[in-house]
Length: 145
Length: 306
Image 1 (cartoon, rainbow over the protein chains, first blue to last red):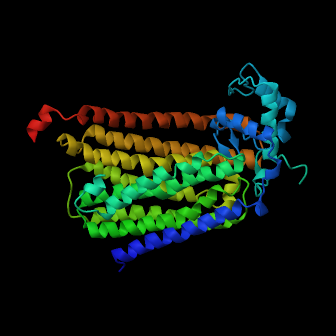
Image 2 (tube, chains in turn cyan, brown):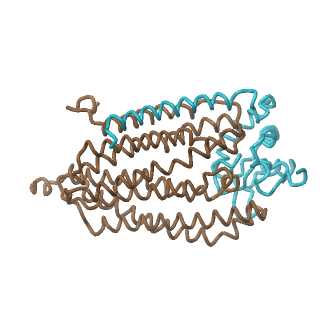
Image 3 (cartoon, rainbow over the protein chains, first blue to last red):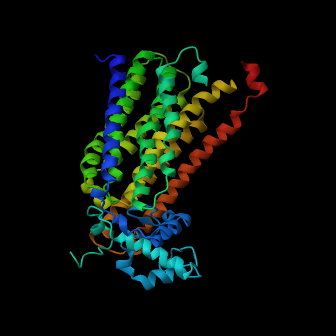
């Protein structure tokens, strides 16, 4: 039967090997050659939009790329679904937006801020999500595929 | 520091300290700033996943071993050997299992294969932990009078296997996760997993340590047992409600393509069940806290009895 020493070797060895593979795969998947995010399209507006997204804790309620809160709709492909004017109206609204009973905070963003957020969503929408972009509800790409 | 001063450095103490150290260290990747939401997300999972399926399990394994040594009286050598096997299995599957968070966030497809295979192995670590706890309990000759601590200890091992192991596996394969990613199915798994693996083990060590520290023999009270059952039944109820709601959501939203808010309205009944179960859960936790406050302070009465 297994001795304590062997058990320890299994723990340390297994950890080291898997961790090295993990680091290798991380470097690989963040390298430019396999980029799926159109990294070169991240403009200053997109970065400003991301800052707004982070600082206002949009993820507390909404999901993006399937990550975040489950209280409010997924926002990947939201431009395809709702169109820019609708999104802009929601973002700039001074009164809480509650089309279906669930209330969204009235952020009252300025015109520039709303544009930045839309630029951010626009960049998100073009990321290749390994098929999830076609599943995320409702299928925004149905028409094109 | 306690580890350094101790007369002997046991495997249990070592594993526990390693867990605490790396838990602190792994907080850092989450603070790296990136312009890309995808890269941000990528490193956020370094924190979250390598915590819950990595170093936190060292902490959990360490506490579990300590409690099993104390409560069952099984030989330390035997318990610590299995502790190595368990944490070994955890890291072997867990580190590359991080890939299951990378399926659909905008990184290479290689993670679908790596994440799929290794996260399918992840339940093994939790299964080993549950079997380990139950077997050591059966094997143990010592019958420690602290029944409440024993309840929470065995409960932690079993519930974490069901919540983290089984329910995690239920949506970890890429083919399934394509549809369940970003739905209440995740909430179903998350609630039971955290409760079993990280909340119950803490309540277990408190239940064990408090009587020792205060000198009271608070080993088996009616309220303590009720706290255990209320909170557990409440949490299982919440998990079922989330699960049913999640499956319904996946079907309506992602297959039938009904709009988000319409689906939420149709699932409303599950949210009421969720609130009822959450109330039961909270009642249990309040009972635990009441016991803690009432008996947590060392009193003259307790000291005299010693």
